[in-house]
Length: 351
Ligand SMILES: *Cc1c(COP(=O)(O)O)cnc(C)c1O
Image 1 (spheres, rainbow, N blue to C red):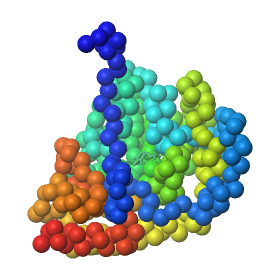
Image 2 (tube, rainbow, N blue to C red):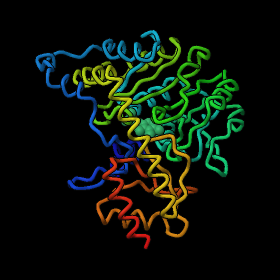
Image 3 (spheres, rainbow, N blue to C red):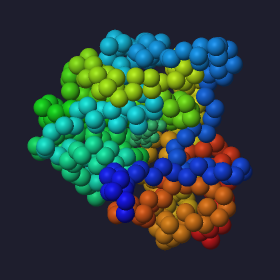
Image 4 (cartoon, helix red, strand yellow):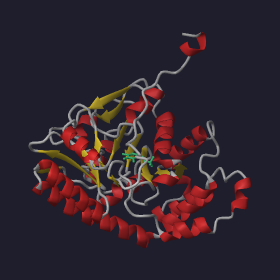
């Protein structure tokens, strides 16, 4: 080994779901939206003045921050935007988790949290979900250096009532509590209004799922002015221009078209409820999903085998070879047509 090689940072990266290169696949593995973004986005992109690309974008991202602030009915000083919520969450970890006491996170949760904790040398402790794979608020009442959880949780798809979320915050007022609301638009109760009551609460949202914009990479956080100000200071110490001009303009168009947003979310929720019934009929147990995906385990056939056989048929779902959840599949809700293809394939595989 050469001397410089010894100085290479050793990390275990997050593994995103596969993005198959071939066409003609049924892609239900990364919780993307099966519908295109609002037609207003296409219009904004078509009208885009590429001459502007010559210039650096606005480092404050005022236009998009303004549109989000207006939508969420909060002052612009309480909004932070980033390159997807992964960027926002990473910045939040870097900004707020600096204690020697461990940050608390669930044992079964979004698998990027422990990756950032390791990258930033943040001590953390995993808190087991209960037998029903739910977060128990009381388990987060012990001493810690911060708390982070998604609501609804991923990949379990289970939402916590707002009263339970508030219990966790109430009992953790000496640290920053991050609530990752990547899937909140599909039926959970948002903690966003609680940011007015608790200045240590950060609520993180994304355009990737319910706004059909995963490819544009837009996420945001709402919190007290103090929290947002601290995040901006860290961001401007690292990279001032994270949001590109095209994403800013597309994002503004997307958030302004609330009717379209409600329409596609409603459609996905409808397909999800239908999918719960269909999978149950096929012998699966599914959790009570409040997201755009189902978390399902089959009574007789192993999840990994089903995963492999679906893949042979060019149907991609997500399988995590991880303790406690290695007999579950995470299935993104697709279009009705895609779901029919899935049901047919499952019927074949399971017969
Ligand atoms: C998808 C997801 C994210 C990240 O989404 P971005 O595309 O980076 O906005 C964050 N948290 C959870 C729980 C997710 O499922």
